[in-house]
Length: 507
Image (cartoon, rainbow, N blue to C red; front, side, top):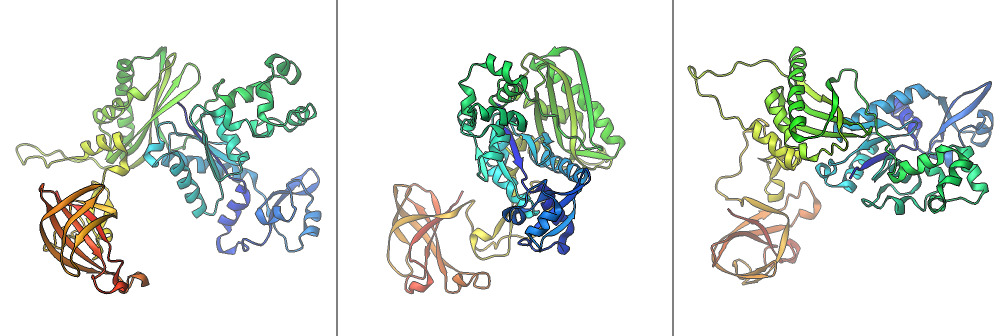
């Protein structure tokens, strides 16, 4: 099922102006209006939230706006620069989220995220991350995800929620309560429908189609069908001028996995040659499949390091062929390197000189494209006594940091974050438990070692000034080994709650 994200930027011109002005921009509470010419009149073209709250609207004469708000800040609007910046924002979305992204002028972008949300923690988490990244850049946004471009566009602009995720296959129910303007109809058509009593999208759904088409023309049913998924609305992805891309058109549409795999292999060779000519290697590649019904499907792969080996790239794509729905056939395949880095030519090791060093980059690429790049990582030490702060994730092929954990204090291979509460039978203050209950199972302790006392890092948080944990390594009667601790020193209530927690499991 196709899933589309629409990002609505309600104050895009003013947010972009403030971002460009930087420190010279007026305070956020100071009303701002961008002005331009409408024939011979100077009018307001865009307002920020403060100006809109004070009653300013686009189209209002500048003299009237200044009369309403004497302290109004005005600047010249630049719609062409706003549109160009929106294209660049779509390129940002293409590089970070999905290969099918485009500007949705004048105030948004649209992204086909089919099959990509799991790489970002799910749809809701992905939308929240998008909004957070834009907010960090000073751009306010609302986001929606639905089965179609039209539905996502409508929900982002008219659902009045920061984030909206329409359930899969339930588009009609999601957009039914929205006003007619959510269908991207012309204002004149919306006004004509209102005179007949049509106020919500649900009012149109139950009506016979033929009379609507005769009375209002094809636009109404076209937009309604696009929103409900009855009519395809392909996204034409934005393309950077420097993008390295190769295409192959087919005289007859292709549909079988074997032919698609052969076509991919044929595309990777000229792409590798183009990358080599520029001294680049690909870190991210997109395969776009243009079907005969004008729909487009995309596959994205990533690599752990820059490369341009055709066989390896072809293998990574072929592992995802099963995700392609060819429909009635694919007429064009396009392969693009959407993220590249410099890659110099290297001399392969000869058997007469030395054995080649082990290389796990290919394995990392396969795993990362199967389960997500964020799930493939290495653990690196961090200078901290608190166990959950003593480790961080680094890329799998990152160079060694040279740091290590203290060898005299063994740490478990698996650490729970946060620690899990357990019930124990133990003597205070310095004895390990005789038995404990974890996840509903009672275990008797056969062996124990400890305590290892760890103090809180008071220089980071005042709450840790008196905090103490006493850790024990224990083994139950079945031979399983655990790392548990008591919060507190067993005597002073200020040092902790005196409760027991299981923090890790030894291999």
